[in-house]
Image 1: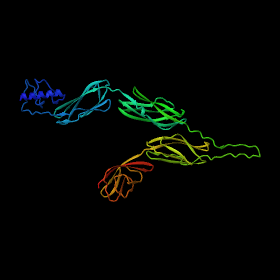
Image 2: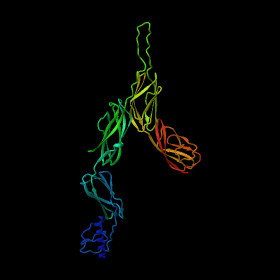
Image 3: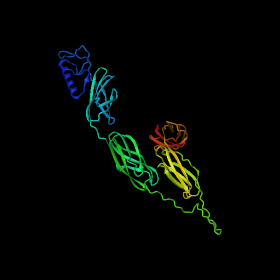
Image 4: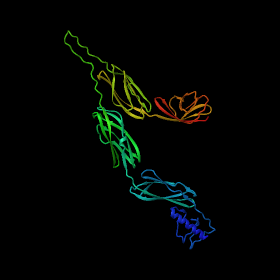
Amino acid sequence: MANKSIAKYIVGYINRKRYGITTGKLSPKPLVDTYTENSNCAVQISCDAPQPCDDDIVYKICNFSIGDLVKTDIDYYKIKFTIPSFHNGLIPYVTEWTYDTDIYELVEETASYITLNRIEDAEFVSVVSVKVTDKDGCFAYQEYDITFVPIEFIATLNCGSISYTGTFEAGEASTGNISVPYTIQGYGNIVIAIDTNVHGFSGSVASFPVTPGNGTSSFPLVYDGTEPSGVKTIPVKLTYGISTSSCNLNVTVAEPPAPVACTAAQNLVIENDSDDVPDIPTPTCDAITLVSGGTLPDAQEDVAYSHTMVFSGDTPFNAVHTTKPSWLNYAVVDNTLVFSGTPTTAETGLAVAIVVYNCELAYSHDIDQTIDVVPVVIVTGTLTHPADNTLTVILDSTIPCDVTFNVSGEPSFFEDIVVLASSISGNNTAIPVIPTCVYASGVTNINVSCSGTLYKITLSVFNSC
């Protein structure tokens, strides 16, 4: 019995040394004065020579173990170690984590994981270990070797892919948009800007955080109108700590429109003192006057914008602008200024400055206003088609007015629905249909306009035929 038990102890001790895993209640002591049964008994026996455990004592065999530690890099500095599994132990567990406090500082610690923040940037080798003890006093041990090599922080602009939108005209201040793709190796904050105010152009984006990989930053490209026409080379610069990257962007500035030439001696008075020749009458032109539509309404995100301003006075009318949103278009049709376009982003305080004139620039009407782009309201709900052949719409939130809900063609997987329309009042409506079945389920999106606001309704579709 004694020889067999000693052999078990020696094998268990060698395995623990070989694999760095300790299982048991007691740390190894010199074999000459310590003996345990099958790597540990519930009671330690000290004696002058190895001997078997006393048959009158009830011994606990510890088979408690834990899985290999799992390391997760949360970001460049933060690291997490997780115990993935516990085996053959009794809860509650007591967990003891060990790490080098000169290299890491504690962020969060629980019974199953620890999160550390690296405070050392130099290359190092370190060990994070954990000891878990169960309710019976059995314990298991795991460790993770860490080798850290710092990476070089590099930021690069993708010069060939830098682009801009907008039209720039000499003598006229305007704003477009610039899109700047980049590649980052490292973590931190970057700044992208027009290097200096070159050729009347400027623009920048405030410092923002990045992670390794590719990204794109977009920001307004502002032109002050002071430069003559031609192709302008604009330097774009990315700053990332002490690392910088620069590219050149070619921007076209167009010629200003030709001035309106005088075609008649309007408003010209010729005096004639001779009684024989009558005075030439002064040509007249009725000045432009606003009749209706003078206030621009706010726009709705993802909804086509439409507005008209009607004027009286002698035609033709013309219009020019000094500033407006890039999505907003306008055109003069007879005596009407027609606005159109579709905004794709919710914004506030968009300036619109347009001059409408007639009579060879003799008279004009100034439009100087701001408008907002109201965001789309997202509404979710369900659309069901149970066996009683009643199509039912249930919305998760209420639309503040009655609107028409038309199922025709939405979704395409409804078959042979004959009665297709009903009014949503509040958030629940039932639509009777000709007996049929829905053979598929899915999601359908429906846009509904209510009191000037666009509601995007996303319905989860179910059937129970």
